[in-house]
Length: 165
Image (cartoon, rainbow, N blue to C red):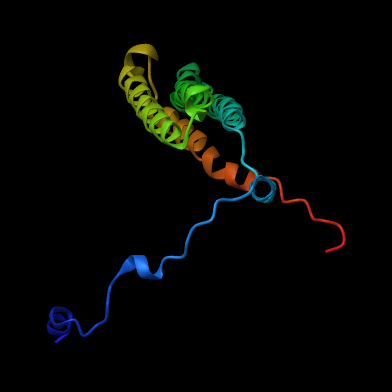
């Protein structure tokens, strides 16, 4: 029955453009107020936090296992997250990335591909670089460091309350 209604046009006019409200660009003051209300965490802060968390995880792994191989594997796992993240942060903070929204989108996609490729390459080279390799320590450190991205959402400082409201 619904198919018949669609073919006969009984469900109404599906002109999407008819219901769209006209988009108005923000003024400079409105954009500034929006940035203040929803501050961003700088990418370099996340990279530094990942490195610090990676060091803590590696030290804990060494204290628990009392084995240099576990410590090195955990450090390498942190590096698999930190090094590509630093490359992406550097690439995204370049002047070319801020030329236009289109350039920013292309730059983001390019640097994300570089980040993934470097991560995969580092993981593939892990058994040759870290001898002997402890995969559980490497993967545990990698996963914990990756979760720093999620914590970055919580690190945003709260919006300043305006006096008199």
